[in-house]
Image (tube, rainbow, N blue to C red; front, side, top):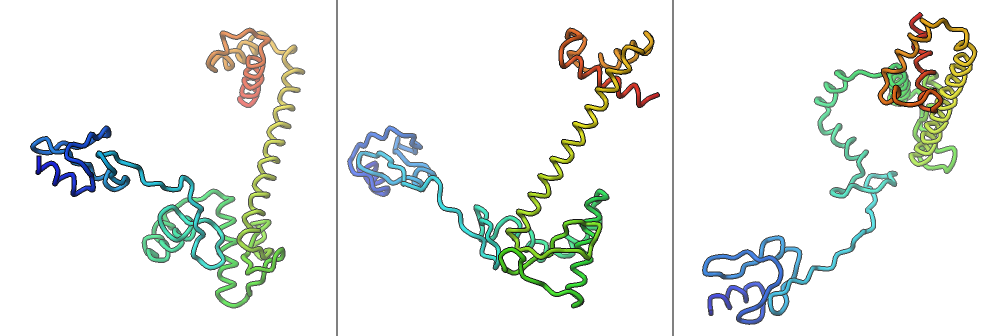
Length: 241
């Protein structure tokens, strides 16, 4: 009895035989012992109850400690994700350089990287000087509206450059969507014009390509999905000719 009372007193529990409704780890001689997680994230009260320590559910995000960086810091650390990667690449320059040489890029990405390298070398050699942001006047960073023209740049701060890139990405996505829609409308118009004049063997070839898609053969011919599959099959058959 004294042994149990002394063991519980070590954890701040008052009473000889406390009734603890939460999970406990039983040691030797049937002595209650609290687990490490329960001791760390809870505080013992009378009769062995564990009261959770109040913690904020959504703490305010901390800002990155790098100068002129207004992005939030990572959950563990003082830098944001981008600044953390930049610091890691600076500390591991040899490894990062070898990994960079082993990478492969698309023609569009390679053009943008070439333009950025051109501006970086001009800044390093003193042929170009940094200018403030044209929007807010903060220290500016080079931005390429057209990567094929490496020398034509605009100076924007980090925030406005991010906004400009997002706007350009949305415009490019909208343009690509419009191009796909125009291509689909043209293919549908060609299909509507050419389908009545196709020979039976040609129609059979188009239907064979369309039936390769799952669940198409079980749909009625007038169903929208069946019509779309038939138009796609006609486009594939037309490209093979």
